Image 1 (cartoon, rainbow, N blue to C red):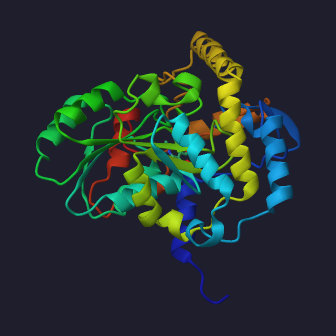
Image 2 (cartoon, rainbow, N blue to C red):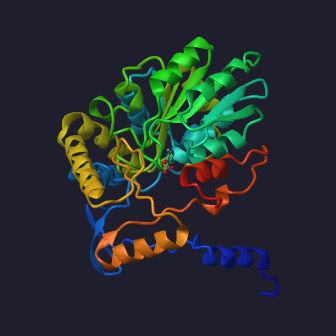
Length: 379
Ligand SMILES: Cc1ncc(COP(=O)(O)O)c(C=O)c1O
């Protein structure tokens, strides 16, 4: 090849120097409490497989039977020829699970946030987002022509300030993670809902890390706080506690009908294979029928957290099974992670991704502001 991407190569070199280059480890076994990495059995502390459902025999059996009966793939996007009966059955189950009128499944949690935000927001609206929201929310917001405001992490007076100044818009949409994926803290949803009701705003919660973890049978933060019926849009993922793949949005019938016609990932990307859909349906049944998985998750969380504190580690203010240990800088985090792996513990380092540090097209660079405040670094 005569032409090379020299500018990309230079960026990769810079990332290696800054220890933000990601040396992706390969898992050579089924996902579970322990996995094989580099031909060695190690303790798995890095996955989102909260309930161990990736290897639950009922899910595996459901996936096998569905593949046998309905094939390996669906051959079409949902709106052309790719909606099987089971896709709609799963959506009915998810709507009931989230105590909502209706639900719609997308290919992933990431595309759910992108699909929802990009289609419901217009130039007449404003979206108001917590500064530590997930990348998929940020990207979804970037796809819209709506005005954007970011409030300081879980800071209700900052949120109220923005709401007070936003009364002229057609819609004010507050968006928050239910459980923040990097810190493990729970959003102050009762306060957010109260403010939304006071200022006539809508609320969207991304419960990727709360579904299967918080609330009755893992219904998420909305149910956990007794707010069923008061949150307009609930997003969830099927890829974490549910143990398979996908994302969904639950809400009113009008919202779901609209997204079925306007949600671009739903319209333009092929539907989930039968094995995935059947395993997700089985997972919801298992959640409802086998409470022991959530009970064990919380027992393990309390035990692990108390032992980490006893050992002198610095933790975040996590209230959930996400237990980040703050190391301080990228180089030290990499070294710590490598040492853990050599001693039989698979604990991937997380650095603030370089891709989030760029200025967004909307001129506010809220990812790195939040990061600096959290770590006290200028990274
Ligand atoms: C808060 C949050 N939302 C959405 C997603 C994306 O979910 P998925 O992995 O299903 O695409 C993640 C994944 O890390 C997440 O943490």
